[in-house]
Image (tube, rainbow, N blue to C red; front, top):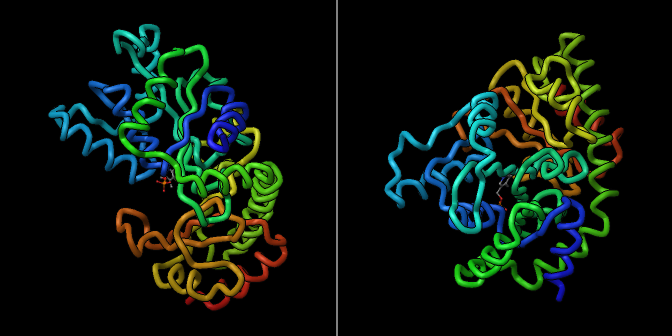
Length: 306
Ligand SMILES: *Cc1c(COP(=O)(O)O)cnc(C)c1O
């Protein structure tokens, strides 16, 4: 009952049929197992999902070169040339456009309105919003196929990737504050980005800020066109590895931790566990604290950053 309610709420918000899973990872894998693609085009995204898709292709004996990481433009070109044939229910032909929309949240973007077939969320992040519960959701476009949600539901039962009852209840409870939390988080993020931008302009330790509200961001024009609310997760770079490391460690109000989308502001020095990311970079997930309090904490941490 609770599960069906949560799925009805999330489905309504995204504009499709929602199916919940035990995690974002299992939602992504469920889609792959259901669609059984011959080729997967991945625009660089969440590393865990990338690894999972690679593993899938290895197990299915699909040659490795067919799993390609492409640019957004390349993805679009291939998608435009193949999308007309998409049939999932009977013949499994054509291209399926699936969007991991975790970071923008349904308040920022509703991909099904822009032609996506399936949307995926790690509900561990903004949907549940309290960094205390794992979960994932797939939302399928209503017009795509009546079969797909049914197949997903059947396979979820046989594969056992069901969201736990308590987690489902927590997610349902969280959805009641979803709009309040995320709107506030996105608004505060803009204030913090502006503050960081001021430090950068003054030549004070901040070298670069990666947020689509800034014209310097590579997705600025896409964001202007598509996003109704700019993301509350972004990153910025300091002058050196040691500055970034010491900034993260000097925070008093904000936590130095991985994950994102929760009510507490988290700052993550990603290089400590992923050396493909610049050592000067810090990822910030803005919470629901007072913007002035976050600024005060960032100010003192920046002072200590040497
Ligand atoms: C966290 C995350 C995932 C994986 O979700 P889990 O619930 O942790 O399994 C996938 N995509 C994005 C963008 C994420 O942030």
